[in-house]
Image 1 (cartoon, one colour):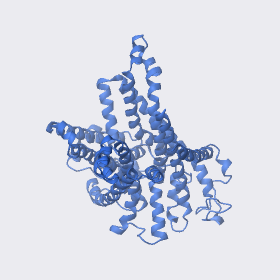
Image 2: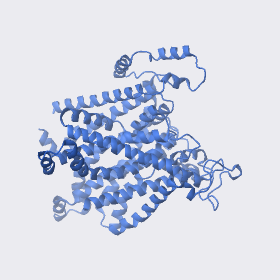
Image 3: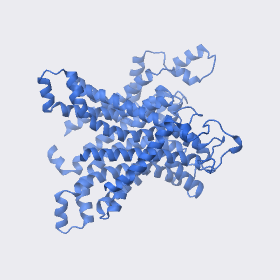
Image 4: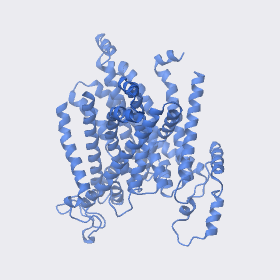
Length: 310
Length: 268
């Protein structure tokens, strides 16, 4: 088991290192000069100023040196200086992270119960039309553009009925609409994976046995099938977190919340490469570690895996 | 079940047909100029002369949606094309090469899959710069990893079958075996994934364009149309609602038809 954990940890570290290398290489291939982007499209730029800026950000040094230095800094939590604001990238990210965590956490709190409820109900009901309706729901909500859903909610519940503030400041009231927007597609992911597994599990002989022994249909779903079907949904959670970061780019733009997603958006707009690189590496690290944690947690949920590991 | 499904097929096909026709011949649907507005006709709600209303410059929203069909759909189709092509080549190479090259390529693919796909798209956009073609390429690159995995799995599966060994024994060249035996057999799952990806691509392209990384302002794109209506959320609901509904309808139609095609090919 320890060897397995050690190997998986090395793999995870390699993936994060590769993500760092990949973004570095991508930006090294950038057709435009970062210093020119920083200055903006002015005419008659002073060459001495360009050279001075280049030296200030260390862009005049050889690529390999910049790569190794940047990597060493990143390992110590120093991701360099933002091209745009001139502030430390690490502290800017640390400042924005809690707002995105609150948003993603709120979305997950809504999405997981909702996704489970939809899948459970669809597996439980005997009404064919209801099952079909519930089964079609995830595909339907995944076809709705997230940014548009956010705008429609804003239109309806902020401007139409003044229930929630239009400007999503910090605080629970401002969190409701963005979290709901993000939760709709997330719950669809959960419901889709879970329902697919539940449908398979409900046809297994052990479910018939449980029913024959007098368990109600609700109990057969909840206590018997759900336990076996929950594993793939659990694996999904790590992927879902990566998706939530992606989704927060759009949702935070719609609701004008200053979080990680907003940082990503502005880093792409201004081509703030150190910022974008740090954001990609940090997100990849979080998703990779979560995937690892979920994989390691599998034997806790499934006793069959525990026996195999022992 | 089949009846219900057929019930959905007809409207889906109609939506897709209309969107494609609008992309190919926009003038057929709307004679109005999508770029020129009449300032006396500003912010009119949907009505008889302007079915989708007009925007803050008096431009006809219906004309803009119709003319936005071409860049939006093109980008999605190009994205899927890039993903299928690049992914298939990577998967074919990895699957036939085996050994060290296979391991190396698949590790690289794993890294691409570990980065959240929307972030990967935005990184590519940051490198290439904004624009419809750039966005299409970015979406395609980020989706290629999944295709390469499916392709490799299929190649490995087909490679072990009797007829491929028989062909090799008969002295057929490696390239011929690849093209005549392996590729046609692997095409099914890749095509199934491609239909799924097309719906995704429509939505992703729209999202990237909504963020402002698509074609520059006066040009109509579905995502940027929704973004342009944001300042008028309270006063002119149609500017955001209508283009958004169009995106949702097209995505739904593509996803539904893809689903029907997939289940049909599976049951056969």
